[in-house]
Amino acid sequence: MLETTIAAIGPLDEPAMAAARDLQGRLTKPAGSLGALEELSVRLAGLAGTCPPPLPEPAAVAIFAGDHGVHAQGVTPWPQEVTAQMIGNFLAGGAVVNAFARQAGASVTVVDVGVATPPVTAPAADTGPRLVEANIRRGTRDMTVEAALTRAEARAAVETGIRVAGDLIDAGAGILLTGDMGIGNTTPAAALVAAFGGVDPAEATGRGTGVDDPTYRRKIEVVRAALRRHAPDPADPLGVLATVGGLEHAALAGLILGAAARRVPVLLDGVIAVSAALAAAAFAPHATGAMVAGHRSAEPGATVALHRLGLTPLIDLGLRLGEGTGALLALPVVTGAVRVLHEVATFDSAGVAEK
Image (cartoon, rainbow, N blue to C red; front, side, top):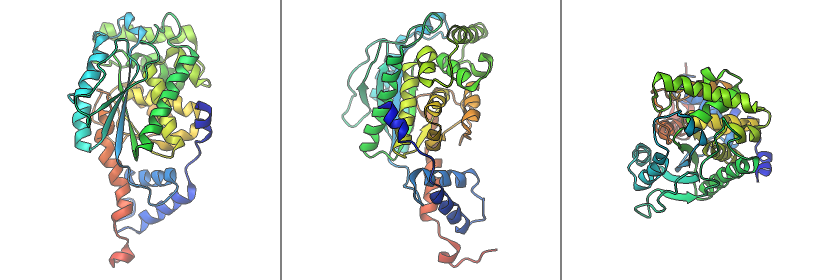
């Protein structure tokens, strides 16, 4: 599945992009006056292969959840059981992601890809968020001691993400949004950013849930120790995910690849998502054409990853929650960029004089 998905990912369609640029120049507004929205609409036309591209709706958030053996190294004060407890909160509709999804009219799908404690198995209502049980193992191994995953486990997680992307698109989703949940997951995210971005762990590691100075220094050294032990090769993305990644990171990389193969945009959330996006781009460089950076996370590794991917975030609000919250807040911006191409009159059609 992974190889066929990668083979299906191609470059953006240049004629469609040229048509979108031409249309932007004929709309009743000064050329370039919509700033980054104009280039975003051009990229989305290139992804769809048509101008104007389809409106990115309905939206579907996929929250991948997993736990981490590196939690034993004291990288966060939060207990690991919170991951499973938050899944229950997602399914009951009580998390921030649920509030933002209701506002945006987006569906929420929670995928247990590697939670240590079996979560609750049913949402409160049939119309609410749904749980996909796809647990590969009950949390990763401690990456400072051994590889977090076997290559087979990492592949299984990536292919789970590909399947989830296909299921959501087959159900009608016009845009996918990345979400994540996993206590301690900013530590493997930092390791992924450092490995793929070629930067020192201190540049890629942030405070996650807001750890104190001693914990933050320990977290940097934990990332450094894992990279020193495994020396992951960025040219081998499956190997990088296996040695220092998490199950949710691998599954998110698969979601991105699955969306890119189907020419559907994927709106990235924070540092977990963009660390996974680095892996997706290593598998298939053209996958970046499907990526839209929703926001700039307060985690420093997010800025490193976005620079590496060549993506400019749509909003910057100092967010560091995860779950898909930043992507949901950026969703109206993406929709607005496309709606302009559908609904704004040209100078000729409106009878408006040009300069």
